Length: 309
Image (cartoon, rainbow, N blue to C red):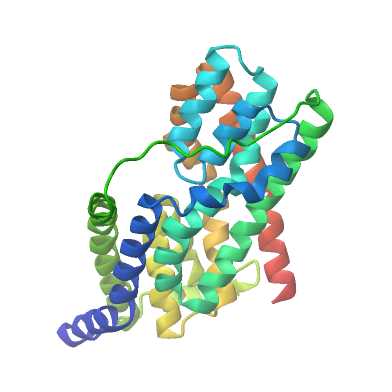
């Protein structure tokens, strides 16, 4: 048993952890320097088509830097009656792609790709890109036909930031450290447990089960994914390294896990968070509609992956 654990830890130290740590540190430092916010000008045509007001546009683009700040801004405009309830809902969904861009640099590239590997990681990110684009496109179309035409603009002003480069680097390192202290322990535990279970044949009975055309081992990823997303990535990465699953099978299992766990995510995270920002009635509408749209488009993404595999 000791040699199994040792081998898995060596694999982690050599192939996964260095890339993971480096990527998370770099991503957080770049975010502190405002690299993500500076690409907001690319999205001016999008918010214009959606007929979003300048206030909503600013809130939506803020998702590139911080989801919490963006929701607080959007909720503030709604509380002040600057924007309507309908515009608030549409803006919240237009932000899906902007939120994806933020997660791309902060989570998907520095965490998902090192855990799943380049092929599976890229496939998973592509699926999430598809879902976010579909949600945003749905909201943009709705806004185009349901909101009055306005001159939507994104301010070119940047917020005052007098921090020195050293302070920004320090802040980035602090954020990276907080993320790593959460991710690394789970990563090590999941990899070691998965290696031991595989060595002792725990996954063998699952080979007889087939779900949606991919092996039964994937059911373990689905089960873990319901409890914790990052642990599911770690387990999928371990199974990929062991040759137990193909990239398509691993990504399909992760997408299916996100679909199955959507109700739990809604109750534990989305609903309380949206209610906290937007109040009970509006927060409930945004949270439930968000869950429905994400489930629908994730099912379509899963279907396309299995169809094209």
